[in-house]
Image 1 (tube, rainbow, N blue to C red):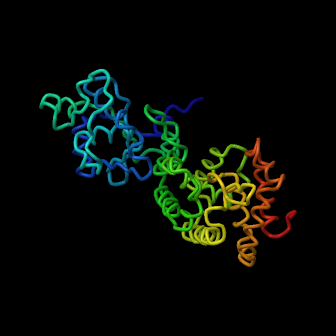
Image 2 (image 1 turned 135 degrees about the vertical axis):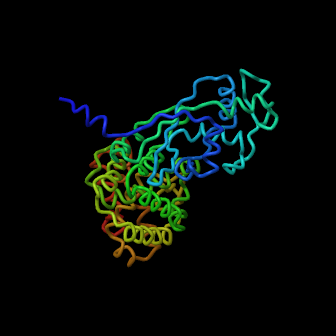
Length: 358
């Protein structure tokens, strides 16, 4: 039998209609917090933002936003960042530190194009300010796991969040999650990590792929046995094991090891540790996640031994490893199978230690 009382008690929410003018005032008073550091503040183009303003004036339906109540009662925006920020930018761009929004691309009310908020009549200004948007507030008293899962499953309009952005946002539902996420951010900004992963495309960095690489580093180090062939599920499960199951993760010591590992990688390979090499032995192309796993798995297991080998020799051995038919087979079709995942780590390990086929 379904326990209906338990279902109702698992999560507590309120539904409130805020006007955009109220949201602006609450944001100014720091009663609602917008955190662009774990989502891209403006993934939307000027045209998308402008069409939202057009939709507001046309009274078209706008999807709800989601907020979570923290321990102080302050509300934190966790979904709807693009919608909220676009309207706040139009009303008062200084409130969110963005350039003034000049409307463009409006195709239903073409006369809006080229207009700023200050160009609007009082009637239109009030129409925008007084337009309500439904806000679902997730109360602080709700079950942590259910709140975490709730955000993971949100799929509202606009541009979808990347897997890592969803992890970053949902981690804030869990006690201690903000500290874990802050540590990921900090490590993603470590100088040698930034240098060693500089071949990661800028568009991927905007989607927090650099922070996902930090998480992947620790998943390779601590959670190889959890890899079942799906990268996203593997990383989700690993993070959840830390946040929800109190899995072993001592931030200070783990961060120290991370920094030491990337200081070593950067000093030896620079930006060529996780990329393919051409026929001339030159690094080429973007960072390849499968190559990242292979090198990280080796460094995690054999850092002391690798430090005893001449850097020039390690570079040549890595080229040989990446060029071997065995490694190519482990990173080609079906690369995310469990056997190939473990195989590519072992291949790189044996080559770097001098045990591979030269």
